[in-house]
Image (cartoon, one colour):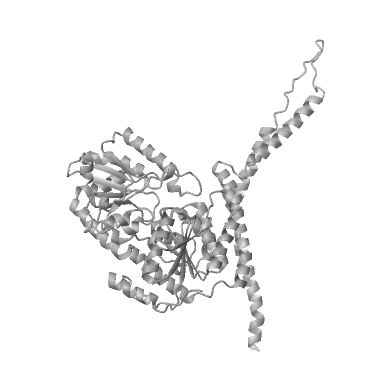
Length: 574
């Protein structure tokens, strides 16, 4: 059973205010008298430092009893939780293709059994795979408060993951989009604004303090002059994405961070600043990322930029690197906040593409310069704008740090989560009710059947065939078969019938007229079928969308309501 602690949350708040000053968003909600059990779920064991920082601070600052459920029991992220004394549980969130679809119910039920056993008060999921599996499992287990924190708009911009999310989002108590663009996408899906709470993935601001950080001497490392303009991009090299319905249209066939656009922008920058240097800070993410990094190195050599573009590889001194740059760039084609928060916390002038959550942190003309995505010329324009006016660029950096400290820090993130937890739990019903869990298991089977049917029939078969050019009304294979059968029948009849016209004898007094054989019927059938198809298209085009069915159903429903209401009115009159 959860421990009873009447002063935990209040004393934690006092300690926070002593160390950091008052809360940036006003008064904290009245603390509950019971130590709430909070569990974060993420389908990873590497990276995702923001999950660790949030869970750790929720425990240390507000006294929650915290646990995490990850994708395994070994990895750098697991080691960080173990070192901090935070309990790690493991579950399987694998879902990469149709073969995993049949194992998905078992994975959901296994996770649900963990939640029922642990009796968590609040569940918060991160990342798409763990979000979908975790929200269904938490709903089936009847966890009192169920939350999904949306890591970015990527899956909401793609067809398949967006409808999967939209078909299951109602199972959550509330959704936490981490940028305004994600919030707008949920609103367009019909989610009520009362269920949406924007909370940013803020980094630990104490790690990005420009007054305490010594700038990395990158110019001396590479033997460059002290006045060399430095442009930098801090990001992993991710593999190029496929052309499919799991990928947003803007990112299909290209990597999400789009290093290629920044490299292609450099010739225009060098035309005005011949001694400028571009530093690409980061390593390749797994084998696909390393292959893309090698491809970018080959592109640099092909463009003759080897002396101006440097691949630094992985570095641990990111704050020092950011402080040494004249311009930091985020060139993504789909993004949440990228590395914009860290760069602005270090007062580094920022150029970013106008996508996703980057427009929340980089305010054009105030904290940086926004440019169009997938446009090297636009990137070059933004970079040159800052290099030509260093004093204005430094002013952008100062404004950027002030904005980040106001809304985009780990402290703000955890405080906002704490408020949300307290508000939702105060009005949440008692969880883990046996009758409701049994009913939800039946409803969950129906939802799962719908998801499986739509994904298997449409997303895995019909839609890929559609993308390849197939159209159901063409029935090409059937038409070809019918034409072959008709032709075969006609040929067999022609071959077996006696010749209707024999050659006239030489002594005949007249000359026989030679009749040409009839034209093949196949072209006529094709023409007739095409004409019928065009007439059908014209008929459909003249009809109103929906064929009037919705209007008829509404009218019938109103008549039923009207007939049901008449006896009630008569009873009231009596």
